[in-house]
Image (cartoon, rainbow, N blue to C red):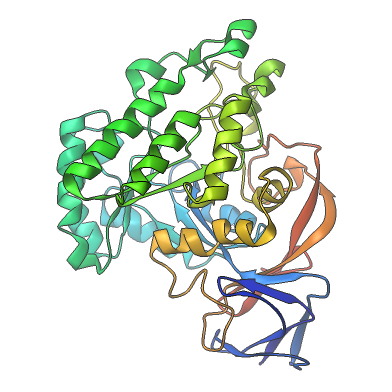
Length: 430
């Protein structure tokens, strides 16, 4: 059966053109031209056809925390948000520090509407004490390692992991990526929001920007020493962005991401004392938000990530100090980027699709050009439609969105996963 996406404007890494897209039953694009006909057709009139999004930072909670999210529900949210690949963080229970858990996540992902790509931990149990069996995991195809949720505190151990990772490049066929959650816990411990004027006014203990920036500085120095590929997760401060900018100018093998909430919300949001605005790293100042936006615009920051972090209603209804940090992000990422990043549409699509796909090493099937022979992992976006955010209406098992009730512009209309239309007119098909 031939599926044709009709009437849209294609935007990909090679530019923009008006054309229909035909997809064969093998999941590959068979034709890109005008006035195509198919046995099944998707209307893309007034819409943008682009390569599917790739999220470098999703917490899917399974195994072990299925009351907040499962791989199935997280993938459904991803597909509704235009994602065709989700990089699953390893802070599950048990952690993804061995092949048994990695294989379990992959098996569950095969049944879902997104490709689920598991990461491995840098240390056993994410405890920061002993290096995980990285070689074994690399041989099984794992290419990204992180202890996300915790920064690796021991600089000696971090150096050893970085040195070891460079020796695994030939086994993986591409550089192993170490993704760091930058936080010096001796400085951040006991803080629940950004340390600054608003934390003082609200009486909520804060985390200083320096807790992030010291680890960014340390790891840049270690990259210079070892040559390892370092990916900085969820950059949130002006100082961090500037250090990464300088390191890239030096030619170091460094990439970085920023989340939608770190360029759309500030620490003033915490004035409501609503734990939905508690996140890790915390929401920062307006000056930090401006710096993150500039980093996205000038290429210092390579990708927009979601840090999709579902939590049950009862856990987020605790006090600000007791509630867990984290926000939903998959279904709102494109719209928030369109509304709040200050970027034009091609820049946004690059940051959501082909640039994160390159970091994840999946350009062979995600984020590639909309061209004949390419894998049909695509999304169709209506940039003008408006909609109102409701956590209860999202696919996630949780509802902790910080954008509740906000009217947004732009939404995904269709998502095609390996040639199959898994979202049609904003509705999941399976």
